[in-house]
Image 1: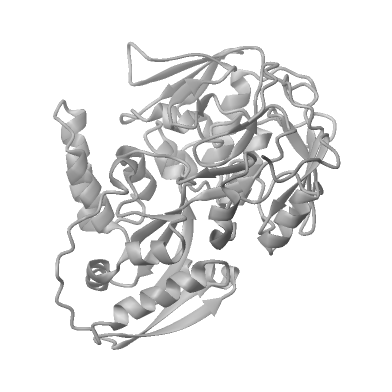
Image 2: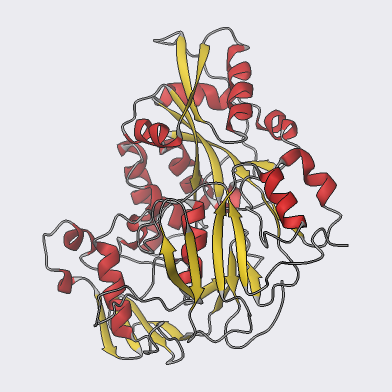
Length: 463
């Protein structure tokens, strides 16, 4: 049984989203919605299936470690095409990584083992001295200053992508299944890259802003919308919709609720009293309690250690944004903190842009926010967050990794604890992915985080 029995047009489809993204630059987009749209503009060399397992995409021939120095050789096939019909080459990948180095990429630190990465980024050396070069049209070399044993993770993100512009008008080209036709504050339309081989019949995708997902579901049922947003589903209705075959859900999305704290002692105290399970139950268990930002141990509950806390301020302000279900989470956190009668919490609901500005400026006592993590693993997590770890925990992490890279055994649990202790926030939950996708659509693939892509190489398989 399916909820939507028809679709208005299975070639030109509409996709409901709950926020209009500001940035669709492949090398710097950070928001989940931005990332999911950009995923349709590129073809990562490594793909992750629904079980988070890596597999080569159709464009990757081989990746292997260099014999004579630290680094990798990456060989690509000549079967990827820009939307002007030209073949994607290794030189395009070099241009892409150079552009990435000069961009504000949210996972830039994960690329820091590349030779001269930081030096090129801040202008101390020329960009041509960055440790990446093309040997020919089908092979590029990455040279490293330190090990990068998470290379497959890097290649599975959209950020390791080629870059090329049209010689005639300077317009950016795309080598994924779609390219950008229109993009402004009111409308986003992607049109099919006619040179991308796929069994999908979708010719265009229009992203429609719908702030009420119940309304989006009604439009989906009528066939006006083909895909509903997976990040703003009404949790109270999930159980009702599970009976439909076109309803897709996953406990993972890569979207994490985190609580920023303005000092470490306050962070430890609040960590000891927050009951994540109570909050998850209130939200119909559509969010999963997490205790770490590192994948293997994120759902492993840590023993609560009682923390004595003498507050400098007895009244704290908790900031949160005006998106569902942030207000519910903030109110329960307030109740849980105030039970000890040590701290009084004032709640402040802010526009998302203002909240982001205050978090960036560290202008808060407590701030509830959502962050997107497109990777998994303890070592990638360290590199990603190393720029915000406190100095003590950063030094301890580096010491552990140096021992590991010098032939020792990596104590993942210890590194996990150090990284999480050094972060300026508390991990709380991972948001589930829930959405309707019209079953008439062919050639769609959903990864473990609920992000949709198009099956390549002429495969004509539905979801």
